[in-house]
Length: 301
Image 1 (cartoon, rainbow, N blue to C red):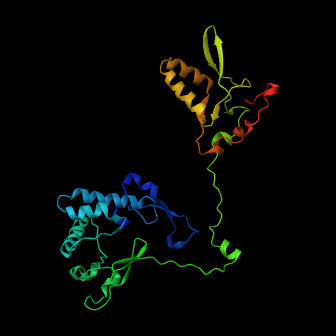
Image 2 (spheres, rainbow, N blue to C red):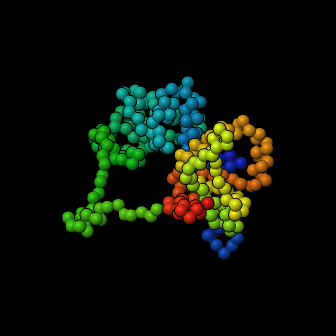
Image 3 (cartoon, one colour):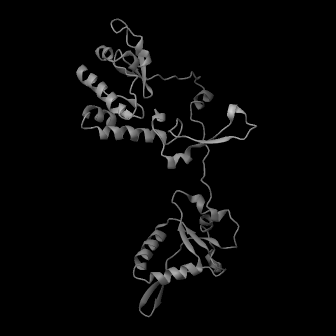
């Protein structure tokens, strides 16, 4: 099915591959590009689905029954639907084949629990299990449909579950548990792995805020490091920082943006917030803040 959908010329570089002629890896491989969507590519099912639904939308006025079937009852290349009469089923088969033929797609491998419907479909268009069935005498076969078994004769879905026999001992019971999995961590941000002068990349946490008075006015105050220029300050997503960020963004609208941009550019300092679920991005510094010795007057910075 996927090979029926072509890839635009500007997108074919994403489907490049190397090929050794006659399997001889001693020679220089040749580079090719796929011109159609391939099995195994994550993009193929979505592109194929889009193509089919595009056809359904385009010819919806001419084939309303088939268009609804393609829009609502297809999963990748499998369609599953129930109708209330043989006549409607035969009409649906005919319309669906015609609407997809407009896109050079062949809809086949039909199966039904109605012998009348199957007898109206050419044998070449039926599913392989239904081709060799005597519709007058034989029982209709079992068919796999979207991961489950369909008993066509009784029109019922079946589930086959294989449970291994385990002794009723501690070891037997523990074997039924899901195996342990390793926690996977995303790549560290570049500022944590690239060499840089001390304190170029710093973390910040908050204890406060601090208020000072000038005359009758009260101001919020913050403190910065004096050990050298800071290239980047990273913080967590604490409510105090989020609130401060929102307050700053609101206040910046009333300030001289050009002057502020020039100042920040001269200092080359960025302020970043960690993703809430990515604690590894900040490294050790959030843990260090848990017990600063403020009695000595030297809190972490």
